[in-house]
Image (tube, rainbow over all chains, first blue to last red):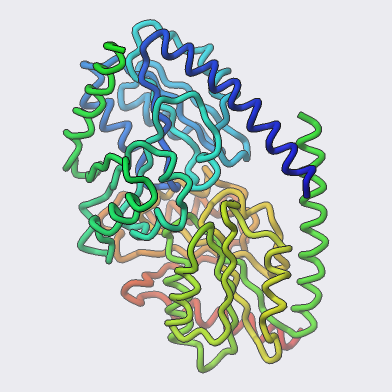
Length: 222
Length: 222
């Protein structure tokens, strides 16, 4: 069905143009933009809640929370102390695109912002194809999902810069192996930086905070 | 972007035609066809493994396992005793479609088959829009994913006939409420039949087996 492929190409080209423009705008302001991706329920919002609690005094953080329906995640991030939180409800669409992000960025005062988190729709497939103008994609996987997921959904792991292995407090209740998931992920993308944590217990979060601060420092020096 | 919408309509119309034809073929042979949908890692393959172990002597079961990459799931189902197992590797596509199922059905001897399981790609969004010619969609959610998921991904729950709440052995380690997820799901779809189970411990599986046998008996009487 060539017609379908043609349209898909057009949509992606248009998306990439808008994403490139977003990237330019954020670069001028030296903002680290992170596109947070995962299956539904891997803990993207929990990680951002924890990050706000720990880092809100040290970093100027803005957040965009995308969902197919409801503004639940945006509300959670506001309750967690988010100063600038905006919601994108896709109304059925399975991923965010650059146009959606572009529109909502107009409502955010970017002056002084150091980190922009974009929480994508929970979906381990479609968001991998849509550049949002981010610096990096950060992919989460939880220990209850199975350690073969990088092999089954390779595109997302190939395009991500960091892998967060969440819910390590539940390791003893599953056959999930941290070593195996890391090995599987690195067979797809050898450069992936990995973190192991439990957003529920708070274990393992410090290296993530350090990484964030390092990225902000790098960006300011760039 | 009207051009995009037009193409999408054409794709869906073509899909629905093929799905209707599949449905007719399966109806003639009195086969119960179930489209198994969920996020990655909710336990679709584990449920089918358990179902094969318990029911393979009592029901003639064929299985199609869809994945973006790898034939891991099909191999697991073969090891679990599946007599006819076929794999669909979508190579990037985020859902199965009727054309893929149609092609692989040619390789399955449908004579005497009573239940056809079609395990979709792990994705709580896109598979909801593509009819595969099934009798029913069965949606799984695991207790580690959060009980708000029916509200955030309503289309899948609206189009499913049964909801399987898996991993109840992990309930005590999360804030997930079975009552709340059932309430959320039924606010979207009042007719959803629900099951609570742990494919790991085997708890709660009997009502699911009974339901399957009842659907086969209904079909034979139809």
